[in-house]
Length: 150
Ligand SMILES: [Zn+2]
Image (cartoon, rainbow, N blue to C red; front, side, top):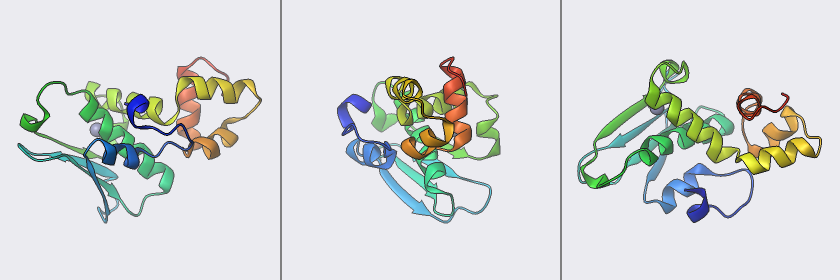
């Protein structure tokens, strides 16, 4: 997905990637519990909702997470129906599809080569959070999944 839609600059902006893929991204008020949603109904383009009250880094991660649910689908997307509400349960990792979407988001926002390069040039998790537009926690998770010191 990155190869066809990304201009190689950081931070990666998943909402721009979504738009290039024909996915509408709407920032709106979703209340305190829900950070985002993916709504795909039959015969319609997918829509990603992001909670406008979340921080930019959280909105970025949520958008990338929802793209992960779309990327998992192969075949005729117009027939696909799916609704994902991203809330507390989606980050616990108990549901396989949610784990996939979270891993997809981490890969999209923090590509392995770029993370390794940042680590090799002495950048810590705080520097990287700034660089990738991600939370420090998300950077630390990414570093440990790549076997790098956090
Ligand atoms: Zn999800």
